[in-house]
Length: 465
Ligand code: PHE
Image (cartoon, rainbow, N blue to C red; front, side):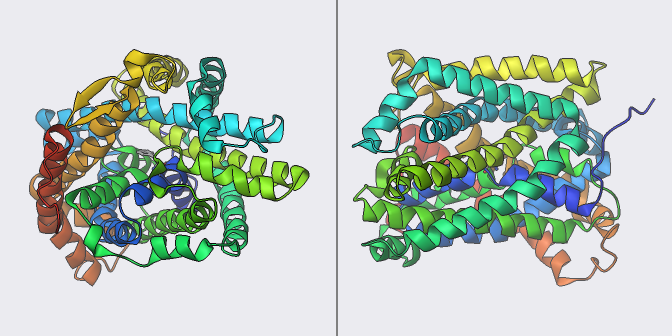
């Protein structure tokens, strides 16, 4: 018998939820430090190219797969492609669990920063870089805050797709955008801001290496929540009358825009304060407090606290989508109730996240967890390498191959056509077909090999291009 599955209330509901999934720490925490580490504006240009040309069609494919099968990623691949393809979907489900395990830790940092700025003495520290280093190595706070974050995520997922996921995004995302815009205006008037804008906006392709290309690709997948079935899962809840093409275009545009704005905010601050753009994962945590401090004790606490609080909400709509994937998998494929499933999965994810949390200086073994490709990585670094940097593009590659050569683009078109009557014969269809059948398999396929070699052997095939 068919089980009752939730649906979004209308098209805006899906767009809000998918944009909520896409917009998160990926845009505001990860994107700026990737730009900083990988050469600035050139990275931004390559990133935008990948997001719109490669990833947007893959998003269309994921939504279509989800809506056609009304299933989690495992069920979607299995229904359309048989048992063996089910494995690909299952790996996506697993990746979701691992990505959430570290994501939740970083979300805990953001939550802690909100508390420390608003109620503690974070603003006014003399060295924000040292503060961040101490902060993430501090086990008890991190344990508490990431636990709180996981519990909140679980409660929202238990409440279900409709009530839990849509509502907040619609209110809080516009608020976050407004605050970022306000801060950008402030940031670009600071001394030396122009050096930051130049770094971020004037490309210098001399510094581009193979790593620039593949990190831009991996970042695009991560930021758009693609390659592991989060969008398949959300797609399984949308109505047949929704236009998949315009939905994907809107979500991609909103996500890229917010990432772009985060860079406009961060780089003037980085150059104003003389911080190295290559600071790494601490970049936003190190560069933002100084500007809140400059606003004075009261305003700084309000604006700074507000910023990190809104960042937490953005992260929350992403953690919810990450937890929804394994939840949909278990509830679709077994008879466990949603509530029990969510509680079990949340506990599992939290435990899997502990080594990522402890590997920030607190426990040596997890801080220097493995050495390969000439670099020593923390536990979190290894999880990011495998499940995000390599795993998501690999998933995107497999989704393209699957849609083009197993499910077939004409069947995908049948699905897309519902809700978009003029899809067949349109330039949109041609673009989708060419990207899914040729451009994505070749470009993403080659990139996956390059990422793999570079990460594990240090070899940079595209070096100097
Ligand atoms: N896109 C989210 C972000 O940018 C992270 C995410 C990745 C969510 C993969 C779901 C799936 O923060």
